[in-house]
Length: 213
Image 1 (cartoon, helix red, strand yellow):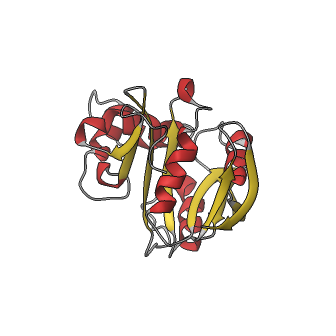
Image 2 (image 1 turned 90 degrees about the vertical axis):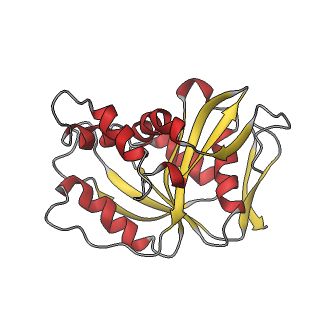
């Protein structure tokens, strides 16, 4: 289910270096401003937070890299992305890691062994067209591992969407201190078991049952 619709302009393809700006913008959107807050602490001279994000996106290594990204196209326009990878190891954060990132690091430890969705985002004006669902199924089709991701408890629309896609809340940790003041609540680790999929009758109706793929 990598195609959004049977149309050559609607598809999911691997990201390229030319997608770096979009990847940085969507990463900040998915992270509710937390990425830009982090990038703002890494700027040099007149550099903007977005420019830092772009620099990180064009790296060949690291979790936030264009090499781990897939880009969704709709009507000939890049509209969404998923950045995912096999999470085979994670570590407790060291003293150099800001305190507000510690809860996320702790939840990633619980996700070791899964296919971890680090970022999933769609441009706001292109939502409710099946793009996010197609990206999730694209990831699921390429792995036999559980799918995991982290979402904030205060983001009710995202929680409801992931639950409709077969994800269950597994663990939650309060948002760490020192980050953006508008980020409150808890970070929630969600998991979708391997070998399961959601039955979709159409773009607007989702059967919440899970069945063997």
